[in-house]
Image (tube, rainbow, N blue to C red; front, side, top):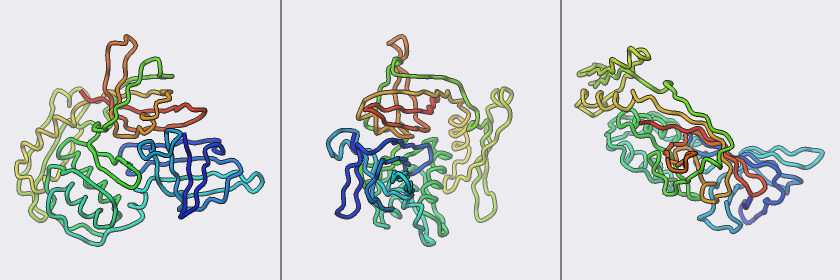
Length: 317
């Protein structure tokens, strides 16, 4: 693995000097965070770039982190350095859009606005229209707002995949590299279920101005009796078929997901790129059953040529 620092023409190979290195991501975050400690570190500066490569060569295909150092702290006695870095998407929360109008597919409009800021950003259509004026806010806030609406109206969650300075929005589970972990690689594993994000009743309302012009409510009565009444109210926006939208979203939101927490140790350079939003496969103990899981959070460490990853997983059936 290679740990490189760069700022303008300056480059430092920190690989041998790094004593601790970790990186993390979670559902809803637009940028990964990295933490590192460096023994007797050279003169690094904030806004210098941290670049992490899973192999021994500085190939773009092996790079899985690229972003600025945002915090530095040097020990006055030893000269050792502690640093925090974020991927490039961190800048999207440090810049705000002016008041602007959205008029079109939500994903297409999100892509248009962020690309206009000079960011190499691509986003698929989300499948629903927005027609509204949004007030000044960070680009990250706009991303969060529209992707949350996408989940409410389509049942699809999205995450951001990075390739150096290129940001691509993908539906969860659509990563091109799908890691496979054998049960023997799991240092720990526990399974359960969660109703934290479950709703048993969905109401969809369509507005004209401040007035409700149509609405529909759908309920999963058996689940209401089983786990209680939990109602989600969704703004239909431009969608006129409120009953169909309520039924569709109830079917998605009333699923009780299976959850799993695992600690996996591996030396797979491709799996080092793993982040929240990825699909991973686990070959279970019988070496025959393969289960699919979506990563909702990842805390990764690297030491001595081995990756250790604490993963929170979700599986909806």
